Length: 121
Image (cartoon, rainbow, N blue to C red; front, side):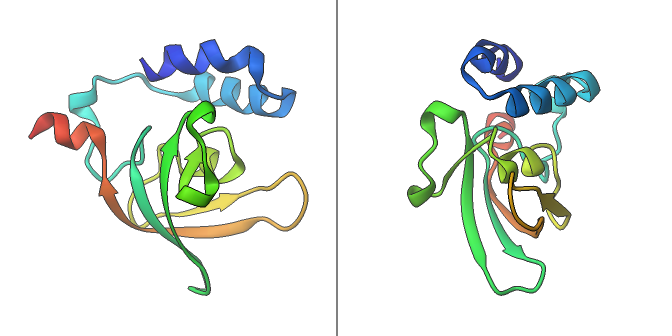
């Protein structure tokens, strides 16, 4: 479902975002939701992250672009941070590459909610 929805959204995204999604699609391994470990960031997962230096903390839920609301912690999967987080694991450091500016490293401190874990329970 996530893959299908991402494809449907492609006509509405920028060329850069489209290229990133296509790159993800070409390397992604499709698995059943029951096979996804509970420490992996998936769509609609809520995570706590900090910058590597610990100066900034964020709680984000990874959502589709039409559901994004940065002020409410709803981060688009097609944003630089969203792309970096998708598929990452708790404890991992990811690099967010904004279109302009310096790359930012975030450490995934905790996965507060992962929908696939709920479905297994």
